[in-house]
Length: 324
Ligand SMILES: Cc1cc2nc3c(=O)[nH]c(=O)nc-3n(C[C@H](O)[C@H](O)[C@H](O)COP(=O)(O)OP(=O)(O)OC[C@H]3O[C@@H](n4cnc5c(N)ncnc54)[C@H](O)[C@@H]3O)c2cc1C
Ligand code: SF4
Image (cartoon, rainbow, N blue to C red; front, side, top):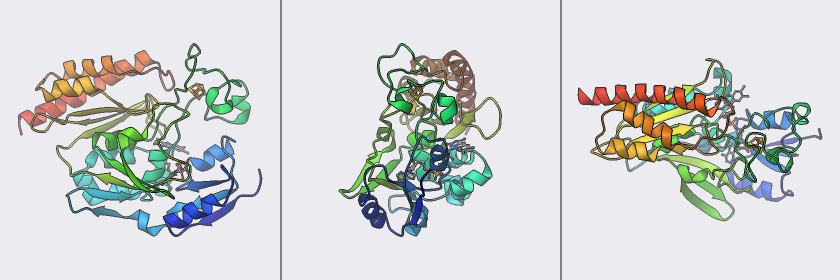
């Protein structure tokens, strides 16, 4: 491994301008480094220059905006976010989502921006070179012609979106502020995920996610992360659920089961229309979701557990609203 230079940058503009001085791929943006450095060790990524974004102080704030929403800097650590009293009160599902990531040590380093930009993951890809040598044709690892998850597929990669903050942020209709040399743009987080494990994010190489914009909270939602063992593992799936408010706006978002977070739109519509049977809404959701990857559990297993967990969450949300 060649020598790597570590450059702490003070502004977003400086980061982009230094990035531009190097040939493509030589300089990368690093936040907490908890994923980036693992991928470097696994030789999934090589670079010469690490542009350290956590030294940009302006990106580490959590602030209310003038419309009743909140703005979170991309360099806020998951630990700070999980413990922030206003976020816990107004957006509890987001606090729960980030608190479920990995371990306390990792959450102290890792950032919200890094969790959103976390690369898609696959059992055949996020491995040592020695292990990957058994699967040399993987489209994502080597640009080969095969996918070991869906061997009959002719194209595409089905690596999984895996950041636990993403489901809650989609349910909350968060938007992302992205800055590049071309200027600034704001995109709904749902559109940030392109649905392919290789061409994964709507993020240009010279672009930096600077802020997450949260609209004012409406009805309070709930979050759950399912993993077979309660250790520091990635999710088999996450559920982020928000009840309807005045007959609209129900959200049922499933994370970690496809290359983008999935919304159960038919089930959301059923709930918006006044359906109060949690079992019917949960069955509809599981039936309509397109999950193909067996990574972290077979599709049949994921669907069975998901239906039961979702029904439990819906029942509790529906009964608490009925009697409130
Ligand atoms: C043992 C272990 C367990 C883990 N368990 C979980 C888990 O349960 N759930 C989970 O969600 N994650 C888990 N992770 C993955 C990772 O730690 C987290 O997702 C973390 O939030 C990544 O944030 P980071 O700041 O460290 O990102 P980094 O590693 O610094 O960056 C991740 C990627 O995002 C890019 N990036 C970072 N910030 C920006 C930005 N602002 N703009 C543009 N690009 C950016 C980087 O270039 C890099 O490609 C685990 C990791 C380990 C090692
Ligand atoms: S989903 Fe298929 S192509 Fe993508 S990383 Fe896994 S095995 Fe490779």
